Length: 63
Image (tube, rainbow, N blue to C red; front, side, top):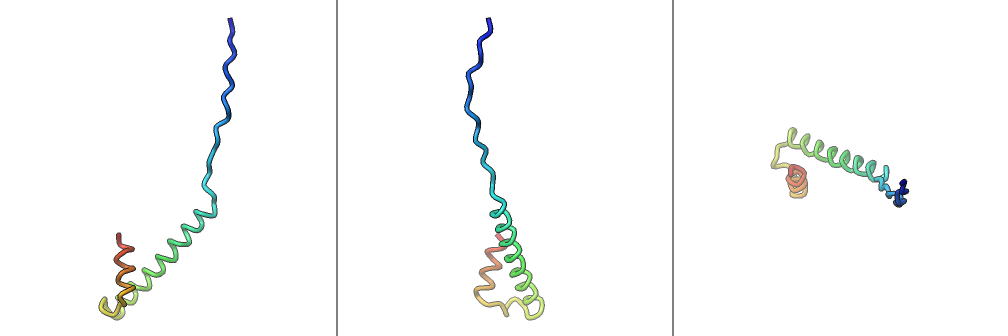
């Protein structure tokens, strides 16, 4: 004899919004630009010419 299957509720699908991905990419681009600027400064004037904030930023970005 045929027994019908119980109906199960639909599964909910969660999607990541596109805006957060774009924001993350922009943030990475800004950080990369800052790193490039600091490295250019090191190339021109040496590591000792960096400010304390620039040294800290470079150290944190390296992790």
